[in-house]
Length: 149
Image (cartoon, rainbow, N blue to C red):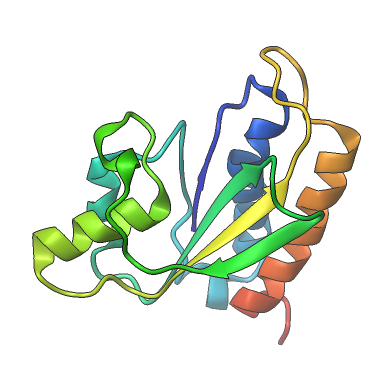
């Protein structure tokens, strides 16, 4: 699980908050939770391609201004895009770096985009974004089979 975002920019905090909340739930289910690594960062960088090594599957989690509420789930494929040269890469570009480095396909990756509306510096997450976050965490519990046994 890899969530990213800026905790001081309102709804942009949804990725790190997702990691925090799902990580707490996983601690209560060590059979499943012990197999999951929870990572978060301010933004995706080229070195995050190394975090894909040896993974069974990866869920990227980010806030989105454009997805439908409460969230959208997309299967990802490696792609070389313009974010490769920026300070904030896309998940598909991180996957492409993995492919280039290892001459192999990355693990299956999925993007969980959580709908947010307010991204102003110094703002807390909006109430509607927190509702969307709760729905996304519920979806992820099933995706991970957390609390299902």
